[in-house]
Length: 163
Image (cartoon, rainbow, N blue to C red; front, side, top):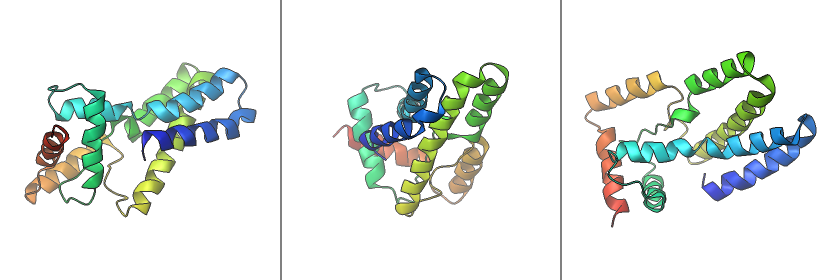
């Protein structure tokens, strides 16, 4: 999904769940976390281009190319904030640090993931993004053994984004 779609979905979700939260800041946390979970795409962009380019504008061009090539057999997405390990960390923070703070955060993130899964399923690529760090490394290694380079795919997308 695009940023604009996530913002609209986040606003709808925040408005729909507002009556269930105790404080207005929890509504804001739900909305904010449903959007900021995608900050990992920027981190992934910087990681994949080895820190050569930090431009948010080019990052959006880069992801346009990634989206246009969504059926490329070398594509294997990785979004750290979308992993079960991060959800487990947030869950533990919710239990042991602040339930009132981290409940809307994890709810907003889960809400976002639901939209991502529906979107990927609609695009007929439901398994393009692993949902754990271990799964990513396992699948990347399996693809490498089959002669498919995930790193080459993202390098190609970075090169195209500079054109």
